[in-house]
Length: 197
Image 1 (cartoon, rainbow, N blue to C red):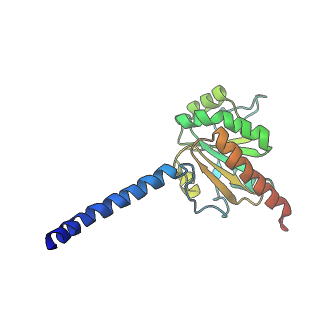
Image 2: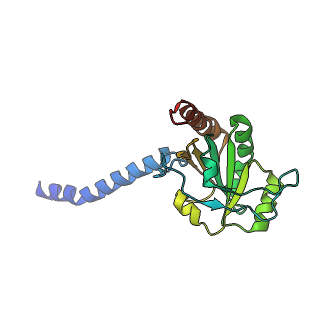
Image 3: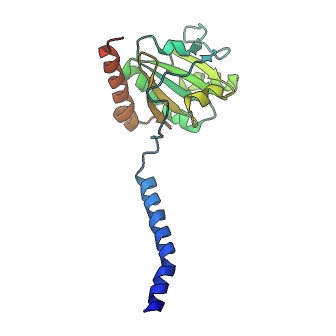
């Protein structure tokens, strides 16, 4: 009886380890990869200036402006998208940014992340420009303040300049319909009903 008991006791750590590994494997399989908790939700966007990309022009031949975070607190819901020309998922997501613009009637601000100027211009020239304004974060310092893990990442900002939603990874048809558009609508309703708006 004692031999059997000692065998079970020796196996116990292995069984516990297998149970823990199984739990984590199940959690990883069922988790939403676009959901990464952000400490920025509900907070003001970090102060910052995003200079224009040299030589980037709008369709009319006018220079594409950069922007500051003050542009995100003018009473209108907006979207901020971190992207880069070297980011393959950014290419996949780009048509959905165009769709987001047409379906949501929000200003979309693009932040080009750690990119070469000519590569950023080529990207916009090739895939189109869904952005109201495009700024750059060449060193990636502002991305740290925003809590960016990598590109692409997209933020919904209410009319007061507060981050209300963060999407990690490329926007897809599903995430556009089930996450971003509802988050924009919720922010729009909250902005309109807020006594300080």
